[in-house]
Image (tube, rainbow, N blue to C red; front, side, top):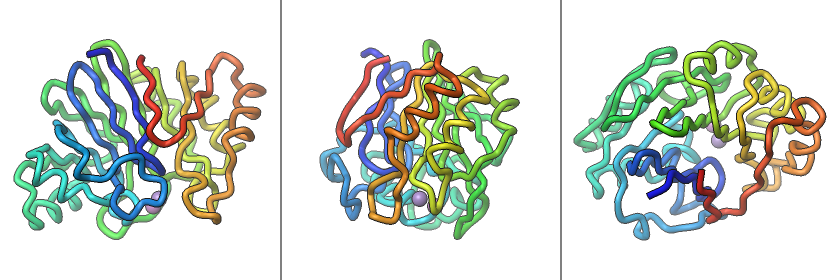
Length: 224
Ligand code: NI
Ligand code: MN
């Protein structure tokens, strides 16, 4: 199957790289914008959790248990979810990379908070495409250097403001590493997340016109 990125709503994505299905921050059962319910998810190889706020840890534990997926997160969340009964966990930390089921996973920083451990983002490196999920984060310029390790094709970027970057700062962030495609996320789920994808798109076209912004609706899938 061709590589794809599918938005499940909020910060939740299903991506397919090299025929491996990866769920990132699968908050579905109480997510008002969820494109699918957890029971509709039938097969997953890897679940990545950027931090353990409820809108990110979400249904990760139940899905990992039911589908026997490997849950990858910062060390403390890996331990916590192992204690909750997840059989296969991989704990790591910011700046490190691991290979899980043949895919390279590189953990990036995120300027945010978390109940357990440190929040993060992930760069997932497939043989044809590299996808970056920024997690919940404020602006930080070190992404300029992290992206040198694994140049990013598709970037999933929070733009909602209040808890993460606003559309302008998100566009400035993207201009530091210029992915081929930038997809806005973490906006509109609740009224308080006011950042608009049109503002993000406008600022990206001014700051780095070579980057294509693709605005998805929950449930939309793009093939890479
Ligand atoms: Ni958060
Ligand atoms: Mn969040």
